[in-house]
Image (cartoon, rainbow, N blue to C red; front, top):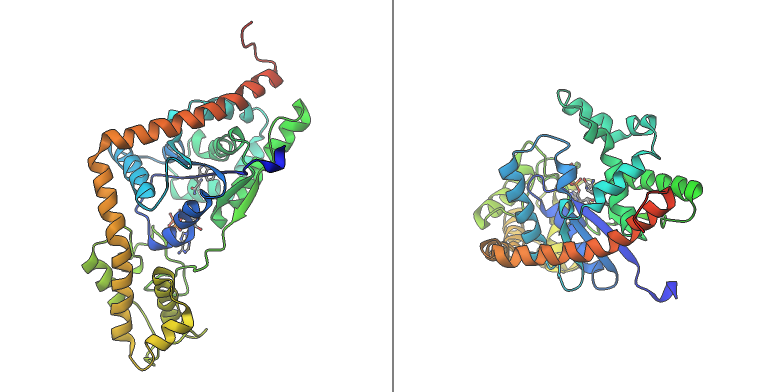
Length: 334
Ligand code: ATP
Ligand code: LTN
């Protein structure tokens, strides 16, 4: 029976910062593709977000913006459960139980905890240390088979596996042990200013990244200023990181192959090519931005989508939590 069922996918994003075309090509697009084949739960991880200081009004606004953006990018609420983490109370409830099977030492050794403790030295709160346990609760509640994440989150999925195995050994088979899936992005998109470094939403230089919310002029201007070499030949090569990055962005956004792109721009020079890349990206972003704006103006619909996502998530989460409570010996009434 088991292997005829759809595999369960779980992933989440924090509603923090503005997303870039790197996030789009490397993450959002994959979420959209996976909903066709798997049973997907996608969360906006607002509970994780408050492990660093957030302005409440801004957090609320960004939560909705993120949900609208994912829908605008093609997440279909009929096909998967898109929901806000704090609307499903079992996340916090399971976290407590899992906390009691997690050691302080292993949390203190997590790379992200060490990094963020340095970065936010005046706010090393318990939530920051407990972040991976909340993430384990997210994943284990849904009995997920696979968890697609960026490489920086792999350690957290591994600790979720450790916690699941430990719990299963102690209390009997309860959780499915999830596999991390580190997505091959197809195109890893690099910074426009330092093309040997990946494009990142937290880059201090705003010209290094194209944000999904950038308007057409901004997109075109940033590509125009992109760092390239001086030989003016549109060709993929190891020693031409800048132009190679632009070629892969162009091919990723137009669906044309690298060879066809090189042929299309042979003899044309960087100026013309940069403009074409800018236009291709801006053309792709325009409808997404328009749809996001439309959705944000229809808060009622957005609220309904998130409520129905939360309801679907709630049902699955309740099943697992009740099993967990039974296993640990919590009284659940007669
Ligand atoms: P930050 O700057 O806050 O570290 P980021 O922009 O590097 O953020 P993450 O939030 O760490 O992005 O990653 C979210 C998802 O986007 C991950 O799945 C990651 O693999 C993907 N991603 C991020 N940047 C790129 C990129 N430049 N190219 C391809 N995929 C990317
Ligand atoms: N920590 C992740 C977001 C996240 C997540 C999850 C990812 C929260 N819960 C569960 C996968 C599974 C991040 O910052 N990208």
